[in-house]
Image 1 (cartoon, rainbow, N blue to C red):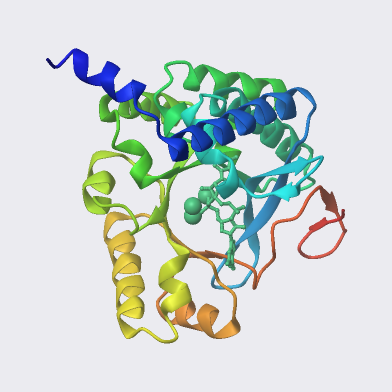
Image 2 (image 1 turned 30 degrees about the vertical axis):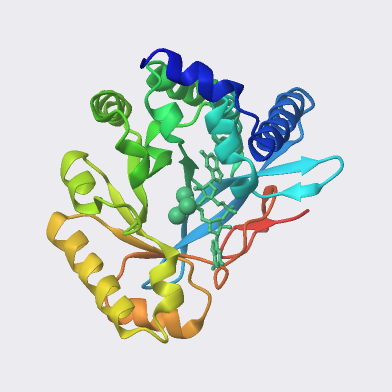
Length: 277
Ligand code: C2E
Ligand code: MG
Ligand code: MG
Ligand code: MG
């Protein structure tokens, strides 16, 4: 009886499902072609020290320059790429490109690269990172990988083994979007992170919701107790920066400091790096 069930289910006509499958097939074919046609691009967003506003690193963020739809942001295609496995070649491309770009920067800023949960459980991820660093001539100490906490839960043992190997290379690991998963503290306890990134939803809320301020303060204190620097995501205003400063939050990232932009070059000034398009 159990065996016949899926077959019967398959035979039922579900117009909505059919439409969904067709759409995702289209996207899958598009992503495949886009990798070949080099339609993907990395933009970089600055990460600054809260105390003096000086840049400490840049996060690489993926963009798709689609020939028909124009610029497509990751929330539109990362999920699909994770489901059909294309995130693996795509993620490898991101890692290589980001390491090469960072190696060409005039100052030794760190580069932060987002890693998908699908990549994290691939046995060859440490090898891919090692090769990207070697190929670019980038010291491992300048690479940081960002992992969203929900990412880790699916196959904890494999993720743990991979993270240990990656850390032993000298690469650091940040916990991204902290506070949005369903087991933030357990994840923080199980993995040896080097930084906590507080999800931007808490800062977005902080002007109107006093609870958000309390939570940010508590996460900063948690980081201090654990000896981990805390970065606040989504800083858009001077007031938000002041709030973070009053809490002794370590780092910040957001439109206030700069939007993600393409191509990093030396402008010769204090900040040394500027974007041109
Ligand atoms: P994330 O890693 O948490 O990246 C931060 C996101 O917040 C970025 O969105 C950034 O543009 C946006 N952001 C930064 N500052 C502000 C601000 O002040 N206000 C507002 N409203 N937004 C801000 P983006 O580039 O659309 O990326 C979305 C997510 O897609 C990323 O979240 C990350 O999880 C994922 N992603 C991006 N690039 C990659 C990649 O190369 N590989 C993988 N696996 N995921 C990626
Ligand atoms: Mg990130
Ligand atoms: Mg984030
Ligand atoms: Mg995110």
